[in-house]
Amino acid sequence: MSEAAIAGAAGSGKRTAGAAITARSIPLAPALIIAAYLVLEIVMFAHRDAWLDEAQAWSWATTLADPADFLVVPGEGHPPLWFWVLRLLSLVVSFDQARLMTLGIAALNAVLLARYAGSNLVVLAFLLFSNIVLHSWGYEFRPYALLLTMTLVALELSRGRRHLAGAWVLAIACGFHFFAGFLFGLYLLVNWQRGLSFRSSIPPMLVGLSFGAMAVLSGLGTPAAEVSTASWTRVLTRVFTDPFWLGSAPDWAVSGAVVLLAGFGLRNNLDVAWPLAAITALFLTFATLVYGVYAWHTAFLVVFLLMAFSLAGEKVPRWPLVLLLLPQIGFGLLRTGIELSKPPYGAGPAVAIVREDAGPGFASERQLVAWPDTAMVAVATSEGFDYLGANGQRHLDTLNWRERDNEYLDIDLLATTPTPYWLICYYCDSPIIAINAAGRGAELVLAPPEDISFRPIHVYRIVAATPVR
Image (cartoon, rainbow, N blue to C red; front, side, top):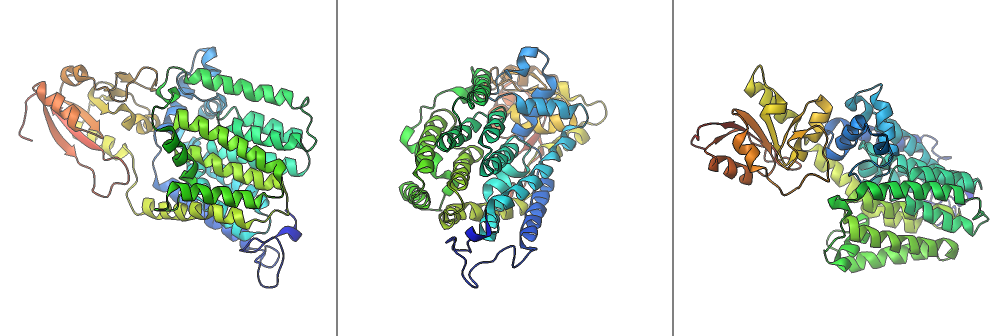
């Protein structure tokens, strides 16, 4: 973005005396904003434990053996490139060490976003401290931060009129997540109007489509691939408004504000506006029918806007984008405060208590039961142990979404596993009732603190005789 196009807080795109704070007038300002962002990333990374999706991908990547599974990862619904990266990392580092990679990616994204924002410090700050960049696509050990990197690199190439190179970058991005195809589609629809040859873009399109096909085949037979039976219009509206949430404002008002602001900002760039509208409608339809409302997925809507405003050029006013990001920065900072004020979530402390309670000779593969089994995936991956799951897969090292049932409770496992064994659970009423019905007792070893930030983890020692609870 050129200096002539720098806007102040109002983002008008015109320089006025005293109205704009720029990197030229305060050279250290962008560096200070980036530094503050990275400090928060490091603090949040250190405060939290790994969670299910981070560990599950690592577990699959390190256990794949069939060559075909490296192309179509069983039951995951994702293309394979992230799993390839994890497999390569596992050859030299552990899971916990590999997670540190996210901080390096966050630093790279901060620099790329600074280039995106130019000298407009308001846009830079709003981007870095948004919920998406600070949390969902930030310190989590998942492919989303890399998707942001590749999107920003593609936009940088497009600004240099290297449209085909940018297309190849986004084609590779499709190998990291199915939804990257929507970003690729938006990029192509705009740049085809600006001289990118359709014929020359066929090879990267075929690569992207191949990765998409791998993701579809990977997801067959999993609950995530099932078409939603929920109210279609209600879910669609929630998906659309999720990244622009404004407290108690009705969804229709938020939707209208988003459309008006985006439309006003791109009113002189119809070659960008109509592809943005088309891709957004397609994304909303797919996400509504298959996935539903997840912050790391609805974040793509914001990235669509970032791509659109970048492709529209330097003369487009940035204040509509600033207003669109306002809820994101509010929620991002609020979430930071809430999470740092509470103890970190994770089953690690619960497992440590089980080991202490059990004493020498404890064997997790025979004496540790989890319900739901997802409660233990992250800590088991981090510490390298197996356990018993009560959702249908008894001997667990990697969850198979095609085999497990989230609502299923393996009563026979609870009733026949030799005592003593230990149960770690979130929702404990059903397994405790089943254990008592089998003539066994459940002695509470650990109750969660009242200010737990996520699901409450309980630990029970299961014994042969029924004690007074």
